Image (cartoon, rainbow, N blue to C red):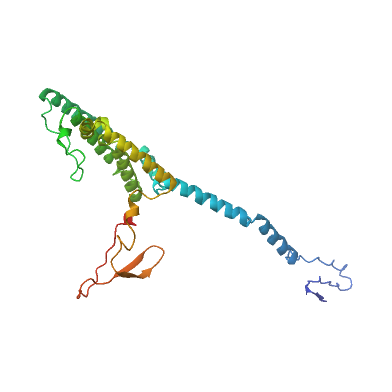
Length: 293
């Protein structure tokens, strides 16, 4: 057997000579060599990877474009992500479509509420407005506490709205399969949308606004329109709400002596200095609501 080494090892075939009279010698068998992976192959792979890699300008342009679109959208949605809201509503709508029992239950509730409201309107007409309400607002809801809401037709308007609001609460909660986070988002967003179209938000369906409009000769509507235009202009241009210029940090707000003792990307922990000669040894941790950030 002979072996030769030139840069890398090579396998040389063995030649065997048969004994005399045993027949011809066996032919040498060509060795099966593994595929050679050398420098040229590695260079070819690296070059392909470099060709597929995006340039810095393309990556930066894509990032800037996405950020600009998100910032512009957030200006009109108060920072709420439309994609997150759509995902939550899709989760709710999909599970509602595959819940025939829940749909039958909601249909039954709608029929009962419509019947109750029809009976309320009938009693209201017969008694001249002196009838018991068919639904009471929540304890924290003070939109319809004025006595003017007890007169026809405003009592029927707000009673019908409360029944509809209660039905939508039943529709957006208690649906099996929907995640708790998405259920909270859908219920909260639906309640906000209903509050936007509440009868207390429109002059023709709000008796308090009608009485004030008659008393002021319509000047309240003109003032409200002026405020709407100014607020819209400030929101589009990115200006601060009117009146904020009267409050300066360190002069009117945030005047309690203190220092930041811990900070990360999410919070700042502020240690306030005691305002009295003596203080209790146990510190008090105050965590403001996240909406006050």
